[in-house]
Length: 222
View (spheres, rainbow, N blue to C red):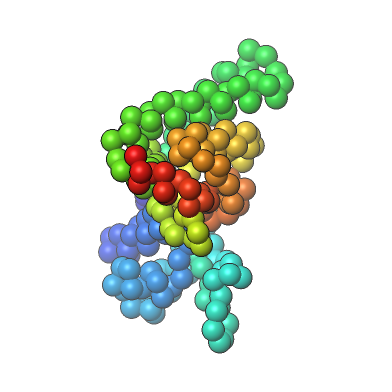
């Protein structure tokens, strides 16, 4: 990732901040300061410049995460323009989708393409998950290796897979069938119903998929 006309040290610091948000999801200035061992004043200066450059944007945190007194801290998220500066496979997928739909027209072709891609994910992930005790953690690791920067977080009686980067966000924004088919692939891989709560393609900071406790238990039993 490159930021033009910036001193070397500042460039590296901005790159580290952007990558931290890309890999860990929406973050406050305080969290970034601790994570990267930077002063609060320094981190805010870089964040402001990243916003000006269109790499990041500041948002209000989710209501569920705002507790205590005072005004809740802003969270900083990666913009589409920011993601586009990192390595991705937008072009490959867009070309494949266009070639597929060029033969004809209609939603059934888009749906078939989405299912084909989801089946490919499932085919590649199945042997990966089979070698590991806990399927949810294994799926997150697999997704990370595929460029999704995924992590697992405990949520109530279940868990969430959070994908902090989406290599196909631009295409999925136009064709949500890709996200829907991907979610169904996760369900088949984990052997339980899952629920997609948020997607980067629809403007959320993270793609979030909720998995009930059943999947955790099943993963440990195998």
